[in-house]
Image (cartoon, rainbow, N blue to C red; front, side, top):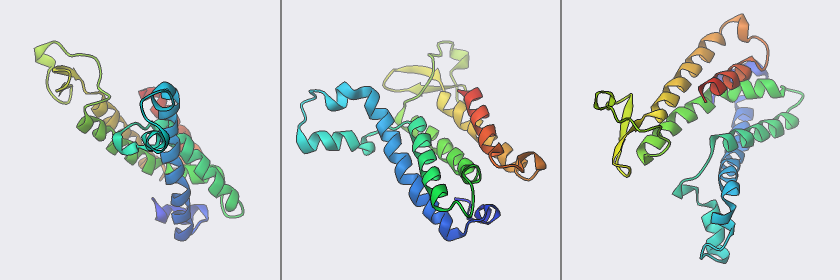
Length: 191
């Protein structure tokens, strides 16, 4: 996390570590929950598993299955809990602004994970002249070329991250919450 930025919002580097300890576990739990709940039949229904095996299947993030939206919701709860504990030192919008860049870095890395797993790709690209990276990517299990949406989102997140880092040095982002609002707007535009 950006411990050097923490001092600007009135928290110490030890506080920043505490913030990390609130954010990361809650983000992981919510990222998994928001993946599992819409697939209730698969995880809670009659899937041939019972007892402990069913529970392990529900929490098995090592097999894949998390959502960025769930991670963001969990992270917001973590930021809220941290802010309530440190309300004399800082405020919620400053804390959320502090973690926007690390969230973007996580998204950038996560999208490349989609490439490695060959998931989260776009529409088929059937024109041979367009079948090259970064425009398209070959998906082995589908046996064809598809739009490289993982790359498009990763590149967009790099752009958002760079713009936030540049704009943080200006008066435009001087007020709490501006970096977060910019992130939400830009991410929504990309989606």
